Structure formats: structure tokens, C-alpha cells
Length: 251
Ligand code: PEP
Image (cartoon, rainbow, N blue to C red):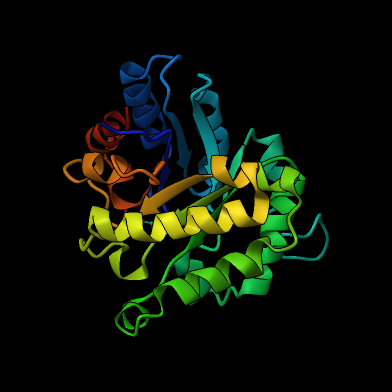
């Protein structure tokens, strides 16, 4: 029995206007406005406005894949929180492993973004996770604890109430290799413990998502784990049928 409450699709640098229309139509068809699972779609920046026009149900929201922590100014090519808010964006993915690895985002930059997003009242979806070598060297928890501490130590409880944590083992992202439900639950329960220690009751309520090759056929058993509150979905969020099936597995 799934206990998931949140499913987020990360389109990465994929998609077009037609996909925003067909995806929202497919989601609306299967999701009643009262459904207890919230769905967030995070397309590239250029599609945010188009997507907002089609997401008028409370349980379908729009998210961005990144943001700049500064308010405005000489940051050529960057997008601010105010710009996202103007487009109706409610969620922002922060610290995705692709940004850490390919765009040199370090823990300090990620902390600044988490702080800015949550202070503005949007929800930050903080991605954490170990790579293969770190897992093989039994460093999984120390890596994640460091990522959590660096990003969240300065957050107030009010800001923490606007935080979602996504556990995304780097070795499982886009590889077809998924953490087993037991492996994922083991890490999620440690993240839950850390959040509770840091933020008391707020930490108990924080949604912790699993991400890494979630598909229609493995979503249900992942979402059935006690501390897995939903999923951050990459590749499978680009196909209407697959994404809808994952949302259904969460219900
Ligand atoms: C992701 O990029 O956040 C992700 C989980 O990708 P995939 O589902 O394709 O592994």
C-alpha cells in the first residue's frame, strides 16, 4: 500500500509546448482535483509559462529545475525567484547531481539557493545522494549528511516547512539501475532521523522523495516503504502513459 504524497517530474533539457499540453491533459484525466497525491512538473524555463496555463488544478503544480539565488542584477543568462514566481512556479529543484557535476554547483551555492527559495515561500526540492564509489566505500551516509548539513543548517523551522528532500543515488540516475526498496528505505530513514533532529516536528513532516530510474513497474514497491513519500522522476516523466502510471502507483 503506497503512502506517497508527492510525485515530481524533471524534464531536464527535454520537451516542448506540445508535451506541456498532452502531459497536463493526461494528468487531469486520471487525477481528480481531490486526489491525495500532488503532482509537480518541472519543464525547462522556456515552457514554464505555457505549463502554468494548463495546470489549473490544485494538485498539479509547476516547478523549475534551477534558480539563481540573487534577486537581480548582472547575472547574464540567469533566472531569479521573482521571475519564477511571476510565472506561477511553486517548486524549485536545487542541487541536482547533474548541476553539481556538470555546472560546478558546490554545497555553498546550493545552500544559498535553498535559503533563498524557502525564504521566498517557494518549496525547495533539495537533491542529495552518493555516487557508486562512495557507496562501495561505505560513505553513503557521511556524504548525504554533509550535503544536508551544508544546505539546511541555517534554515529556520518556517523555512524547513518549505523543504522537500530527494534522495537520488547518482549511480541510479538515468542508468536503469534502481536502488532496491530496502536500500532506499535505509537511507530515507536516516534522512528522516536527521530532519527530526534538526527541525523537530517539522522534520517529521518533510516529504522525502526517491529518485533514480523510477519506472511504472518499480514505483509501487518503492512508494510502499515507510519513509518514501514519493518520487522525483526523470526519463519516465517525459511519456504521458509512464508518468501517469507512476502517479497512480503513488495513490
Ligand atoms: C533525475 O534526473 O532526477 C532522475 C531521477 O532521472 P531518472 O528518473 O531518469 O533516473
